[in-house]
Image 1 (spheres, one colour):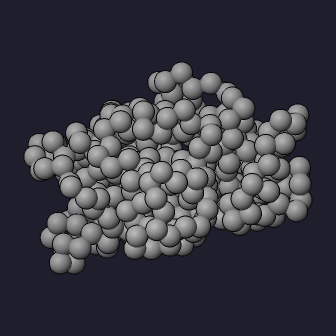
Image 2 (cartoon, rainbow, N blue to C red):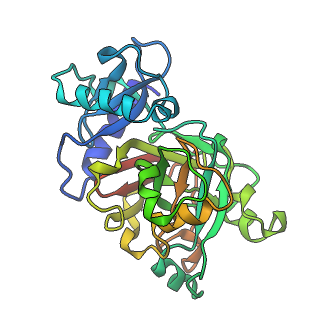
Image 3 (cartoon, rainbow, N blue to C red):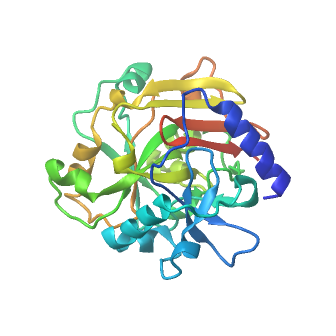
Length: 314
């Protein structure tokens, strides 16, 4: 991405802030690239919308990817906490390219119809057990990357979601123990090809959810101890500046702990795994008439305390 493009996105990001986000000492882990560094690096975002501290400059022995960082658990987290407390040089935001906070996870687990108000929008009953599907990890892109409209679909839609990132391996996890397996949270855009969800592929959801670029994540993995209550966060989506989704995570049908307990009956969770916890009402397909994304659109997905991701549609 060109530097001018990054600066424009930064301007939009700052203009987009509607809630009183303040720079903080919260732990906001990022993956990034910079012109003077070789390959991707791990860093700390200095508050929502702030610059980046290069963790490798603080401790060159730290892993270079988020998954490896999470696999080492408290050992690496304690180093990051020390780095956050130190007065370290900060790379200006305009000089770095943000990657998704997690890339190539073992799995991306998604939850359908998990907001009470989204169920009302569709005039369907609230599910009695979680509706689980998935996206391939190859759909993941960074917080300011482009979303590519596939020629196979004419009905590409937006969905803002709270994403949970797993920090500790587990199977058959009890709901009461679930948060011990969570590293933190980030913002997700569950881009969806409605024609492939409702009329193609036997109405199986996978293909319509997993085109390349259909899972922007970011900008940071905000550790769980930095989020007051993940079940009470304002969540919204804007398309070309117009608010299309606006709700609160308190509308979730199944809470994070229950989702982890349910899914871990079937699969083992590994550090870096991502859970998309569902979307609130306001998606394009249920508008009258339906509205879908087109070339040139800009989608901003924002969650209180976590930040905003901005994706141009091409």
